[in-house]
Length: 93
Image 1 (tube, rainbow, N blue to C red):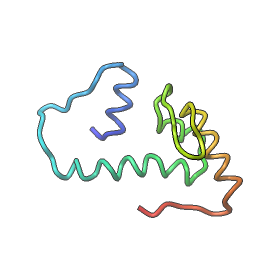
Image 2: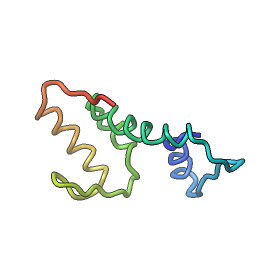
Image 3: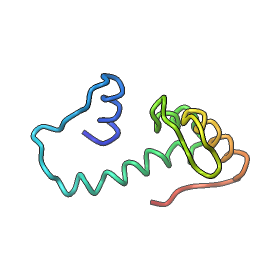
């Protein structure tokens, strides 16, 4: 189960997920940062507000130079900003 899938299950059930059997898997650990980055970059590159909202917990907060507040509101702010500020954009990971 990927990091993102675990987070979705935890959000739906309110319970933490545990991988059974517990093991250290170097390959899985190294792919997690990639999954986090692509989960964030994909909706931003596509200017997809609804997909961007799935990156954050519903009650999450975003605290950065350009925006401090509710993460769901940040999703709307940043996607609308990208539409306004850039003609073309993409992330190379």
